Amino acid sequence: MRILVLGRTGYLGRHVVAHLRGLPDTHLPEAGRSSTGAGPGLRIDLAADSPDRLAKTLAEAAPDAVINCAGATGGDAVTLAEVNARGPAALCAALRQAAPRARLVHLGSAAEYGPGEPGAKVTETAATRPLGPYGATKLAGTAAVAASGLDAVVLRVGNPVGPGAPPTGLPGRVAALLREAGTATRTGTETGAETGAETGAGVGAEAGAVLRLGDLSAYRDFVDVRDVARAAVLAATAAGPLPPVLNIGGGEAVRVRDLVHLLARRAGFGGRIEEDTGPAGGSARSAAVSWQCSDITAAGEALGWRPSYTLEESLAALWTDGAAPTGGGGTAEGAGGTEGDRSP
Image 1 (cartoon, rainbow, N blue to C red):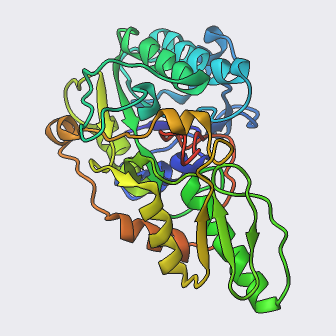
Image 2 (spheres, one colour; image 1 turned 45 degrees about the vertical axis):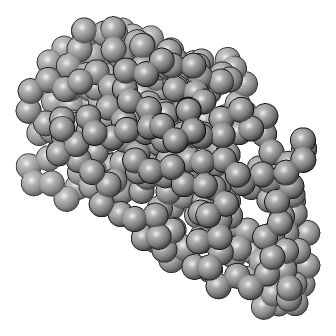
């Protein structure tokens, strides 16, 4: 089976590729924005290539399935629209020309739902009310995939966590701050870092360190990146049609504060964690989205998928993984403004 992974150098894309490499009789054509030439190293830029050019490249790759992990998590509204909305639409148009029978698995985001109702789990049929350009452009990408007429499924991913989590998201950022605090404590120096979890608040890292973060009162649905990769592979290889949208999350709402304290204990951090709960202490988007939790029943029924890692296991893997990479060509889509990880 030939499976083309787009955004393969991003956080989720790397894990999807690693999972696929463990499957027998699976070939992974290589493609990316910086690749040149034909054959291995096909050049694909969803934000800029015309559908006709994409179709020619896809015809050469001849995929049985495409897993689209590419997406933008930051930047202005134009950038977000080009990558998250225009990109999936162009990909669908190209697939209709070059590989109309191929299965398309597109990684969406739980941010498409917008604010959740405290205590409730959102299902795939819930109304979508995204806040801000990120969620809106991800929703536009989902709409393009759902209306494409292709054999396609959108996986609405919660907040990814686990090994390799980038510092653009709260788990990776806090891990980086904790490592920085530990390094400064060992050297007896002051870091002067100004990269708090929400607002860029600093961390004093001498003995008796203080980790100053934004408001951590929001609830988010965290899911291990390896479980997301497994869901994507299951969706790409499943026999028969799939529902148009499936939620992929942990299925539980976790207070962000609890995640931070769990990670701090895993790191052996002996200092204080302080939150700025004032108007400047957190993003407006996070304040507006105080609760997110996905109902993952449908993914279990359609794919036989459930999370296999606990949050504690995910944080342990994140911590032991070493310094978090920043990633490249792809992104690691997640949901919720608190963690900030807008990079599938």
